[in-house]
Length: 264
Image (cartoon, rainbow, N blue to C red; front, side):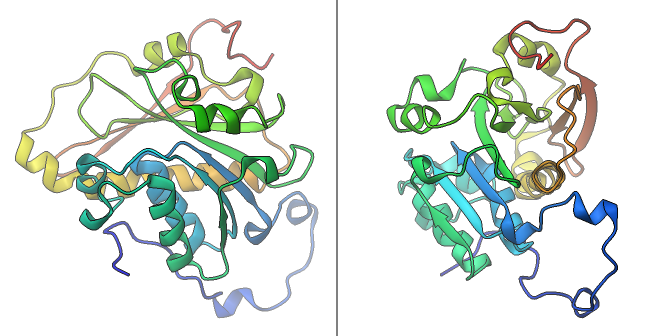
């Protein structure tokens, strides 16, 4: 099958990593990438590209849920190829995951996703600032969310509407009961900057998706492989497209703790 413009890391283990290393306290607190279990609840171009990168990094356990069709914008962003347009996002992404890592298991049954007591579990939820909660408007996603426990960890990857297409916000990891609320998300997004010219922006769109996906993949690995996740972390990453260079801004969740999305 053809592959997208978004790169994936090689699946072969580097020779320098084959030798045994002393086991220290730091290593004991981490879960190997091959043992991670990731649930992608909804898929946008950035989370689709991040999943491919994670598969290339050795992650094998994927549950992908998003029956919505691939759009032309999804293909223009570099996460899918043109023949994928009109097909379901989850089916196309599962095929790409297996192409990036033949040892990956990409399922679509949320009820089989492990509980939060298993190390290495993480929910990656794609949503938009224009929708309060994507699971409210899509029956399959709502059914999948009903299987989640209140203390499942979730990483929200948010498409910011009203900003240049491709603008992405990566929310800090939170327990499911304290997932990002719409008011805090809109406040953190701020006002839209000036949009680059259309032609240069579209030419740079796949590379921007790759940058945002790489940042997202790093945050997924940092959260899912560690048992030392700090739920009080309040830094938000905002990635804005540019021509030719994207910008990455770090901002705060807000000056006051939110009663809805604060884990405290």
